[in-house]
Image 1 (cartoon, rainbow, N blue to C red):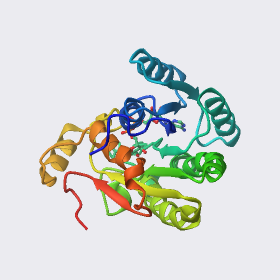
Image 2 (spheres, rainbow, N blue to C red):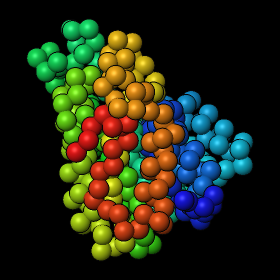
Image 3 (cartoon, helix red, strand yellow):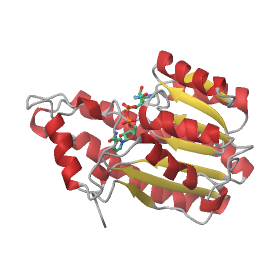
Image 4 (cartoon, helix red, strand yellow):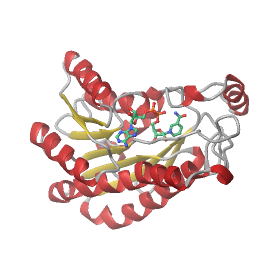
Length: 259
Ligand code: NAD
């Protein structure tokens, strides 16, 4: 449905682009003709990802930043836009899901440390706010923008494989999305969320084989998803063709959750 150069002439910023879903999203945008700022706090990962993109003939630049750090985000956006131009497409993907705790790696509320709670909120929620705030002026100037934030099925219903800190941030990203859709719509900026189910990435490989098998069986499509399947939905939402879609949450979960 999208042309092969559907995103030509656009500049996209993807956070957490060093690996997993974020890297697939960044690659999909670059393959569709966008110039892409690959942002991650892991310098080695993100430089390798952007170098691989450049080697494929795509326009890409790597920037290293912690999305939870205001100064680091401002500097990364400054360097990225200096290299590629003003950002009109943003995917807030960077996220963490710590599984420390006393019970088999799962973080239950009764043994969750306040520092751990704060760090998950800082990265998953405040990070999306800081990066969005940094690029929205460029979108308002262009009177065009697309913002997609990666939520989770865990932000929409109880999910026993994550902690309450993670679930709270993924639910909050849905409120963040709906509010900003209202606030930024008059400026020609759409704001949506994507809620993946179980996707096969390094983040999820820390989970036991039994848990992954239980999720697979509970999923009507009977398998885990791939990063590329999440990227394809993001690519549609950041395209011109999705111009009348805003304030929505799109599940990419193999039918694990149906509402
Ligand atoms: P991942 O751990 O494989 O990749 C996350 C990337 O984000 C890494 O490259 C990491 O270095 C980067 N990152 C982490 N903290 C950062 C920070 N503070 N600043 C900048 N970069 C940072 O994870 P993934 O599975 O690809 O998940 C990507 C997103 O999708 C996350 O928001 C996650 O919550 C969400 N998600 C994943 C799944 C799944 O099953 N994998 C399901 C639902 C939602």
